Picture 1 (cartoon, rainbow, N blue to C red):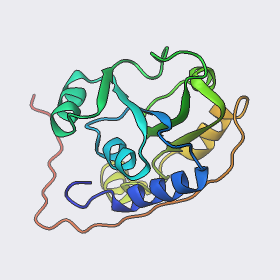
Picture 2: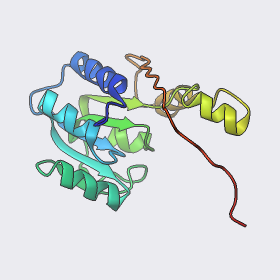
Picture 3: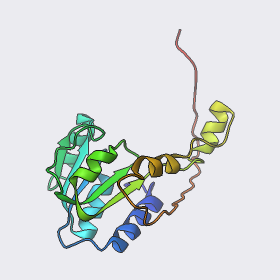
Picture 4: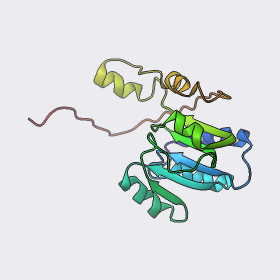
Length: 176
């Protein structure tokens, strides 16, 4: 997102959060936050309190260096979440693994879960070049099924961004 990639997703996330009517200083966690760009941008825009969680210590180190005034935790977000029961108003998961039962446990009554996953046609040109097919799995349907027991789908939206990369060369093969 710092280089301009991901602006469509960032905008869609912000629009969804604006409609979520979160309380002031809402307690939030970004599961699988990576280097923290989305968490930092959304925290600034919506005055969120909370932290980013990622399994990668390198990603958390990068997040802490880039955004030192936010809280970052190294933990496995698809296992047990490091939060008390009903302690968060918002859980955010951008293309990361998550645990539906844990999400239900840590969200307060009336809390919101915002999940972003790649569409079936994400990276379709690369997928076609490597695998010979344009589309991948329907990840949105899988997430809906995963959370169906504990959550009600309020909104589903699609964000698309297309970029042309000049001078890019991709080499595939083994080094045997």
